[in-house]
Length: 118
Image (cartoon, rainbow, N blue to C red):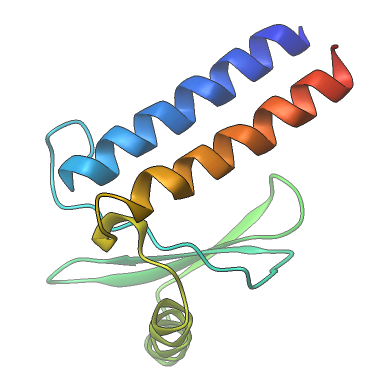
């Protein structure tokens, strides 16, 4: 079971690395990946189209809240932009920095896999 989980995790990192290199997820749309060391117990997702804006918040578990309240969405967008300004942009990094970032992620996964499985 853990082998399958780690294989899928390795595959996910490989996929994200390819998407970051091309700037597109599976050749659709534009993709920018930001990495922040800021720890947040909750996951925030800002969903924005030309017509609508919404925020989804995952609360510690699989439960989540979605709102399109304009004031909340505007404040969340300001917060997300602030975090983005303080974050590393692997998709905008140099050819030398980007592979180092992903190698670091892969090493963390490998070390945990070795520790748990052997």
